[in-house]
Length: 81
Image (cartoon, rainbow, N blue to C red):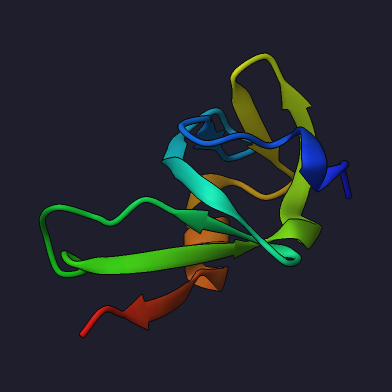
């Protein structure tokens, strides 16, 4: 796991395959909170990625150790009511 303190707001989160997963809202404990999805089946929800999936932080990108489709399967969802 990479140092989560290096992760900043608005960084792009990408899978090990280079595919876009989301955009960082902020780090919440040992999780990365992604910005709300604006459309589709998950619209209006924040998603979280486990900090354990972070392989490295490079420039303005957070690269995960899993491919995007696998990382998305591990996402946690939070309803905003």
